[in-house]
Length: 208
Image (cartoon, rainbow, N blue to C red):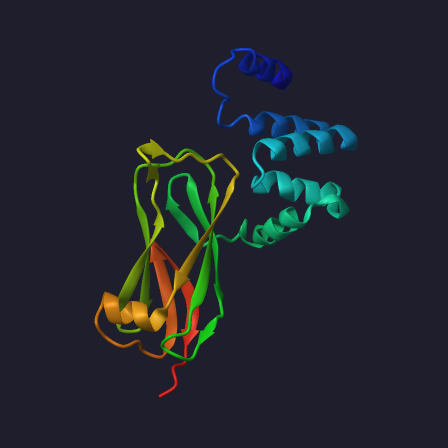
């Protein structure tokens, strides 16, 4: 029983189990299947208290009580649009859901762009590896940005299953290209590759 598992884990007096939010989540799914909506909502809330960026829990709450989502939860909910159509798996346990670039169209070399990478933890993955986003125009690689640096102050950063990782990366396409590959950018799409996954980032329409 999930209640017994939680009691066992919390009675040890040691570190909390990293994935303890899943206990409340699966308890909520069970309550929901039985039609016990109030208890299901309470359990989903408990799972989110333990993991505020828990996208799976937010999606279920949005189905049961959409008017009760907080402003921050509503902002996270928009990323559910790619749950069934992600860009791909960067590695086992780390899914690349989407990329948003603001603005999506760049017309000057010095124009700043904010790239928001949305990643979903679906299982344990290699925490010690450093991941980089490689930007390419139609002539090839132009620059790269550090995306995930798993070691910080000698400790491994950790993630929770179902947790949404939002990674903002500032980009200056023209400047980054000049320093990265010592050439100018070509008009057209600027794409991004992480591991074996790739997607369009933004459009380059540079004024001559």
